[in-house]
Length: 513
Image (cartoon, rainbow, N blue to C red; front, side, top):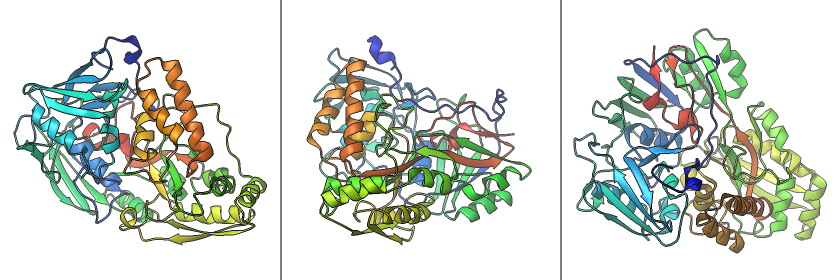
């Protein structure tokens, strides 16, 4: 962390996969100019510019392109300056001072001030907000401006990794007026101005000539994003030249796509995971024996081989990928074992059981096929999974966290604490399994104030074990990001995997030749 004297705080707070150039050679210096067209997989008619309700790729890409967070994170997982040029903490780690970058402006020309920061962070606090970032900011007792470029944040308990939480995608800074922000404004501070926004369809950006760091961002003159949910249509758009970049490449056609002249495919290991979350407070999932039966009834390797076609690694029913700091290597890999599944099912009082599973391709690509494979493997344990494919449009509003067993994906966690706080604490708006474990809840709080990294690591290892053994997440796989682009599209040597397409900074950081 920047500007903090404790040696233990100088470490990167969230490991991020570093992906080298395909050729292994250094990439030529960026060039300015040109118009980039992206065919994006994730987007629905319910998309919004409101940072408190953005669950899909189109929203993340829009925020990363036209808005800014206080801090960034480099490819090594180290927290870096952004709208905050520096920060420091009190000795007891309960008060943090954020120094706002002087000269930073919104696209409208308004200077970024401490008042904007206070109002933007407060958007995610309080009883009335449904923001997924609310739980990350709950330890804050006070946010106040101390002059035009200085913000003081007071916590109710120490948090050694607090600055890293400010990298969370949702915590973008918006212009304030009378202490309030317009959460759907197109105004922002990012390297590109959002010129038009059609939910679930189209976005158009132009370079922000006043951006504070044009040496490293904003090489394109302009860019547009077209949401193309169908994988085949997305691939055809790239081949035909309608778009220059596509994400979520149809894995069945990867080898064919690699043979197309003028197109390159990149395959980036990541902590993105596909999940099948169960509501642990809804019968029959409120019995951990049923949850364990379902965990032993899935053949993860089969899903990696047949759905991901090898572009990923097996999951282990907890959300922390092996490259994330404090990932545990001591938890045994759970294997497909129908006999064990049947054992736990009988402990729950069932010889056989009927369970509905609602999926959609926007839940994760290949979710329907994964559900069918799961149903086939579970049948050997007496579990009859009734898989229903739901329409993509509105899936996250209608099905996710409402139906007791469904499909969903999560991008890589910034830190273990961030993922546990946003998805596994009982107060988290995105607690998709309704998980509530007293020991786990206590460990989350204790780890935040533990400076000793060895002790903190032990706590995070225990938390992963608790989720693995008692949680409601069936985690089939961690998934590689597979995107494709024309030969004239270039990126930096290193990309981060906090999200797809270079943590959605493809427009901000990539260029054309």
